[in-house]
Image (tube, rainbow over all chains, first blue to last red; front, side, top):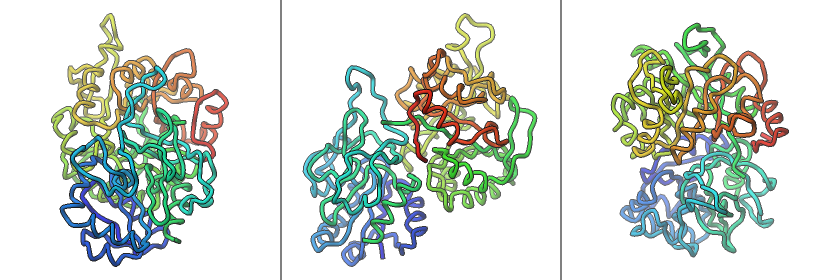
Length: 202
Length: 263
């Protein structure tokens, strides 16, 4: 059973629909016990980083930490990826899981002397795909995925793919069983479904 | 590289796709769910469903249509028409929409933009603006006026100023329809699109007037007309088999526009 965490950040419908379409059994939860006993965990989320505060309030942060420590596959989507880091300048007082080092920051207002529009909305390509990535198996470099966000994580050794907008940022992060995608795989047509399928089949 | 989006728009009345010419004559063009999937398969980057029934009786039909359309649609899906409250928006999101488009109701009560955004995120709120150039002005584009009620009612508000307010109130995107060019297949209003795009940080979707690939290249800034759209919307150009998104994108790619290919 994939436990999909509901922390009232946007709409879960699309993520559930895509996972169910791929044949996965899903359950929407706010319970730490469900998270501890999950075979897989998905943390979706759009909107403000502040919303992740509810994870701490519901004692879900500790439950996720326990689950991933014993190897439960975890996928964070959009704000769900950002939460895996130390935090975000969007809500400086709300801590993330701190699984990955660094903080998420807003896109700069300008890049290479030109104005940079924010949010970054639309289809952009996955580049520098790490060959050992299990989440990106079968995904061709240059494949397009759908983004809508204003904050992003920097590139590090855990980055499994980058996307370029105002410089490179982390499109996919992956270390062992802990993974995150900044884009919306549930809205990214065939490429997105391939990525979700890879996660479902882990 | 971030690509320019091609958005297929379905105008729906009483559960059927229709297309008007300059907001008036209506022709039947098919089943919304079927057409949405056909567009997505043919490479459309997003689907917009605009309900032009907007009567109380029509709402149930609309939610059913949205549910049917969204069931296996894995590209962004926007629904607009008749959304007057955060509750209306919530029902449409529950049925499977990713974004809502609000128009007359946002003019009537601008707080609605923030109300929907606070529950579902700014990315889920598109403010649609129906614009008409000011006929008797030294700056017909700068003084373009916002119309509501399907283009029937002038509001006295200037398009650029309203777009800025919508952004400040938390809109995620602007869908700008030029009433001067809509349905004419003679090209987008590039100048109006560029002026609005320069006035806001959020993406601007150009709408009204698509008739050929060259028109899309123009509004994306790859032509002499200097458009600055982030995305462009088309309805009739696709419905009657003029072209499909993949063919359109191949032509745009050749013209130097960055698009999602293969798709």
